Image (cartoon, rainbow over all chains, first blue to last red; front, side, top):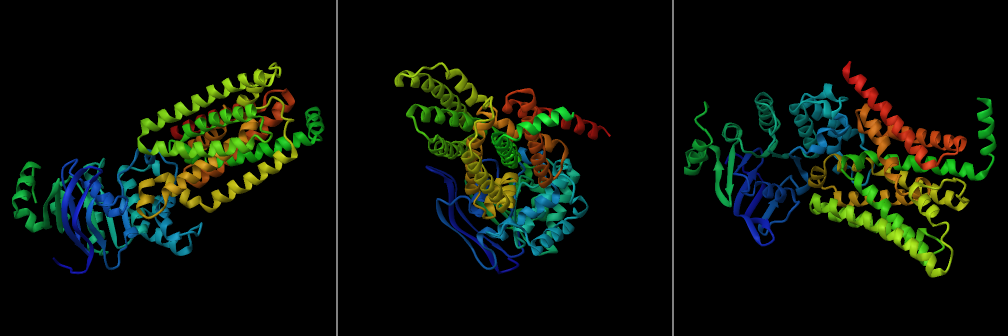
Length: 243
Length: 287
């Protein structure tokens, strides 16, 4: 592993709902600056794992611990879009600023610092010119950028992305991946991404976690490419794509 | 024109008319504040359910002969709001069914109780249908408010507006994206609860005014109208408050002049504004 400063550690974690275990024996670590891609079929426990990482759900057994600079409430989160949001009357600025809401505590309004943070994040994701536009009038790709900017307002060290390109056309999806990759490489943000998209995973990620009922693989991308499961999965998913 | 003004002037010399105006505007203001949140969170149905619960509670209060209805109606409605929210969280269908069940049940039992009550007490029930009608659709006469009602209403309005201001950003975050808000450490359950309680309080106060069947209109219509045209959360809220105040004032004045029921006149004004705004947004979009 490249960087030894660990941010997140899962030890023998089992997840599930009462009585039924969805996935068990998860052991992995995420270091500062890593780009971890979580792969797995539907029902393999990916979304349960996300909930557990976000602290919305406690694991059945095992321990998820955060170390160093990141606390549990400091993960930026890009959830899948809901139908409600698609026609929500709110300006881009309002939505990006709402990422700062956890910084306020009991203070009712945003201070200068938080407003500046929101502006900086909009600049970083190249949506400054959209600031006054209405969210529901934006394209899918633009909407995802807005939500990503919001996630970055909530936490600048680590972001968790839940299928970030769902519903985007290939061009917008590519732009989104490049953007995320840029955040990871240039800004040093640790990325955890849940995805179906095998090709993108092996192209951008530094580490891969493959789950399906249990932990099937965890390691660097290169190890995954040469592993049995990785090769099997790649061939199934049409991995003989160029690159 | 001057004749109309003279008539209005004459009417406004009665304190009861002035009270009605004050209370009407305050209720309109409060109910429009949370309209957008309710519409976007798909909570509109809760407003409707709660107003029926409030009707049932009022019937119970009448039967029990409680002098101050509020003592029963307010806690029952607030508790129902909390309960409805709880069931709504599990699965959507279950929540929907629960609301339908509670609201229709409360309506039926309320009416039943109101029918039974006079017989038990040995009083004449000649006025029953008028009573029921005024509870459902608001008093035909707006001259029923006492100074105490007005003061209670002012206190309620101050509390609701200040709570809304203090929690504005949190309410926005919870309305726009509950899972994100939760993930970043906001107590979204708490804010949902807050929203439900505020709605319950507004509904109980508005019931005397527009009647329990028409309250939802007061909450939903201004927000829907404003959402047609405006593009940011803040402007939508400001606009819906203005629409709501305008419609309330217009409705009250018109009902004084034309002798129409207050509640339905206000709602009719709200519908009119909604149609105008829909037309406007249609025209704007075509350009």
